[in-house]
Structures are given as C-alpha cells and as structure tokens.
Length: 362
Image (cartoon, rainbow, N blue to C red; front, side, top):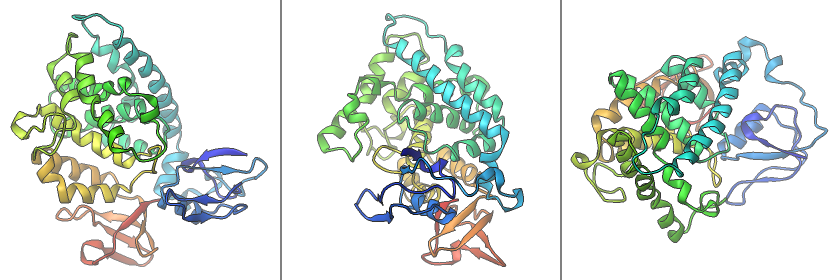
C-alpha cells in the first residue's frame, strides 16, 4: 500500500482505504477504482494524497491517451519538456536548501554571491524560457511536498517572470528573483513542529510563524546584499492598507520590491498544496485578488500581474460549479475571474452567469 500524490494518480488505480476531507466528509470508499472524474473529485476537495493498493494495475495512463483527447494539463504533463523541468526543479530545490543553510553560518559583512544563488533558477528558466511556459509548469506541480524551499523557488520564478512583465531592467529582475528566493529565509528559525503541522495553526503558533519576517531580516541584515532583498524578507507580509505585519506599514513605506514579492508569495501560497489543505483553484485566488487586491496590494503591480496570470490559463480544461467541463477560450478583461468557456457546442460567458464560476483546473 503506497501513498500517492493526487497529481500523480492514474485512472485504474484502486483506493486502499476510505478517503475523507479535512472536515471528515467521506469522498471515496475503499476499493474504489479511480476514474478521471474520481481524481477530479479528490482535487476538488483538496485531497493532497491517497493510499493506493500495491497490486492495482492502471487500466490506462496519460501515455496511452490519444493526444487529441488529452486535457491541456495532460498534454503538459506528458511532454518531455515537463518531465525535464520537473526533474530539474526537484534537483534545484535540493541544491537551494544547501545554499540557504550556508547563510546561517557566514559572518557579518560577508559578500553573498547572488549569481551563485541564481544558478538554479536560471537553469529552470532555460527549460521553460517564456513566462507562460513557466506558469504551465508550475500549475501542474502544485502538489510538490516542500512548503518552504519549493515555495521559495516558486516565488523566485514567479518574481522573475513578473519583473519582466513589469518591464524592469535585467539587473533589477535578478535582484527581485533573489528577493523571491530569500523572502522566507526566516522560516529556518521556526520549529519544524509548527511549519509542518498537518492542521491549522493555533493563534499562538501563528504568532510564532509571523516572527519569520523579522528573523529573516536579522539573518540578512549584516550581509553584503542589495537592500531590496533584505527589505523583502522583512516586509513581504506588509499590506498597502496597513493591515499586514510585522510593522503595519502602508504603501509609501513598503519597499517596492517587497510589494512585488508579496503578490508572488500570496499567489503561490494559495495555489500550492499545504500540509493542512490542497491547492485552491487559481480562479478563486484571482477572484480574491480582484476583491481585495487594490486595497492590499500596489495597484500598478497587481493589475499587471492579474492580467498576465489569467492569460496563462487560456486553453486549460476547467470544471464549472454546475459540474460541466469546458475549455477557457477568452479572458474578460473587466472580470478576470470569469472567463468565456467552451462547453461542448456552447460558449458560456461566466461574467453573465450569476453564481456560475470555475471550480477547478483539470
């Protein structure tokens, strides 16, 4: 009996035990043979992994599905480019762990070689040279089980793409990328029992987690690093309306790079799996950004981010809240979280359908 990440499940596998949600709601019975719809159901209920019978033989796999019948996600995952990127990502995360842990041992005044820190992200960027390709890869790796180091790598890649979307000079894009890599370095000072807790944190535990911003700044403050990188570690949880932490700063007092990292950080955190929940649907995240974004995030950054990010989902197969499946064909610039979806012979403009929305990316 092996535990398999939901993203790696294949139709034909057999569930070895009853599967429940975090609220103890039954999702699948023991001995259920998985189908595409059953796997989608697991994703919908944010089930990160399930136990599979060792002797279950998949009736089919992505390799056996005709290309024309694959969803956009299946085509990505079956591509050689994705397999190479995924392997390189896992290697890069392991390499990055070693580099970050070294930061804890260096002396004050030491010059940090940012080019060395960027080696892993640059190699990944070479595997997926366009911004949309990067997001294609990241969208399909949302179950990677490493909430700190993989998250930092994700945020760095998002920051690199984001910086280019904003038209920043190459030198600033590199600095922003390093800021993304090191924004959560303070979590190295947080007990693993809290970081890896498989449930929601208590108020006291959350107070401990919040210290990672100051801890990160303290790790970096005496090193020879660009000031933006240090500020991003300290300020990436600040919000433009003053509702953030640790200092409750407002827009004009928050470092500009920290304002960018904040957006990348929240997007990745909400669309990635965590020990206590599965990934949120990106369109739910986009909807949250639309409703709160202009108050909490710098408008000149969040509007650019949302417009580009939502376009990365064009052609993706989605599950709608009424159970229908379709492909995103057009983005509504005035209502980004409600695109036009092609369902069979119908085109549905979700911005005109009250209560109908994208439930999940397939």
